[in-house]
Image (cartoon, rainbow, N blue to C red; front, side, top):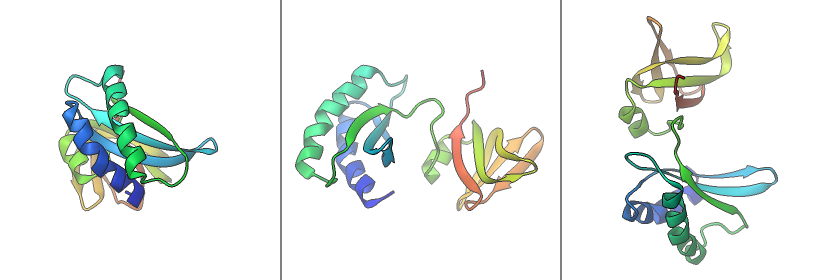
Length: 151
């Protein structure tokens, strides 16, 4: 995480937990010509719009006072979602055995996307069981790993 997201994470964590949720991630990105600060939350049983609104209202004045971002930005609080991205080692441990999608920077065996069960994670290397085959991808190959929901 960048220095900005680290600071926002520290500020947001107690507010989110006080609201009965857990802090999943913080991102600060440029989209459509503007900067967006997004706080992603999670809760057993799912996140409601009321959860997002309550945390947004509680966190907004704290962010204004701490002023961790010098530029103007759009602030959003939302659910981590059913197909959330896995980034940290704890994310991978929590969802071991779950179905994930691994997207690669370069094609491997004719594909840049693999869907299977998360079988292992060690030092940035992700192993996924695709059909009957275990496939391992190192950190340099991986563009994104996210949970996958089959319909």
